Length: 294
Image (tube, helix red, strand yellow):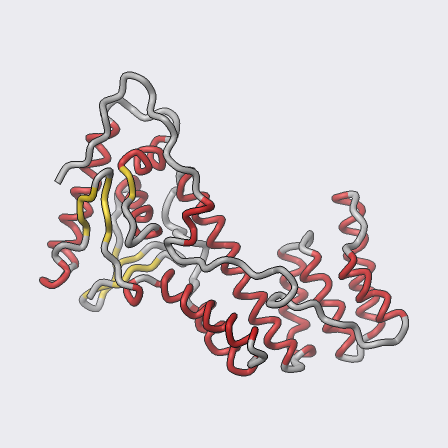
């Protein structure tokens, strides 16, 4: 059975080895078919991904050629006999048949949903494992070896958000388990990576305060306030201000929770990302009709 990877460099694994097409536009086409696996991808959407608003007159035929190359490549070069019809023609485009266990994105979606449900049920200790396994599926930016067009850029942005949500839930599970001290280093790294995300600033202040480091917690708050004011002209959010007030008063700050306070996200699977991706735009007058071929 073939296995497909999108959460990092795009790879196809089968027969004990991993590989991917080398031609850039063939790679784009395969990525688009995979990220919308199990659903028909219109030929016009493939053309939009490959050429944007300025497709050549031969765009339809060229895109069909790329699909043909992928079909031949999967069938002859990678797929065992049982997978021969993995890429199907389905008007107005093409359908890549991918079972959930074959695609890392689908496995991520399942593990994220499992961890989120456990956390919502108050089972933080049980939630850590599926959330960690979901995050372990990531080996880099989504489709890292693909030069993304605007359709795939939208998908990649949505996937990055879902990865961040999984990380937030895993951090929340650790916080519920009282692992504040262990999280300080990770939260400092996240604050440095995303200096305008008040969520991470808030969690860092909480973790420091709950670890008995009141001075460091206040210092972290003032650093956050300075960044927000100097770079964005903003005041701290109510959540961050509330945590700061608790520290000043010598109280244990209440940690805002990703699972219960509005930071939950939709599933990341191929069907869920559809809402974040614009549909194909009208083709330019004079181009041939984009009809898929078998």
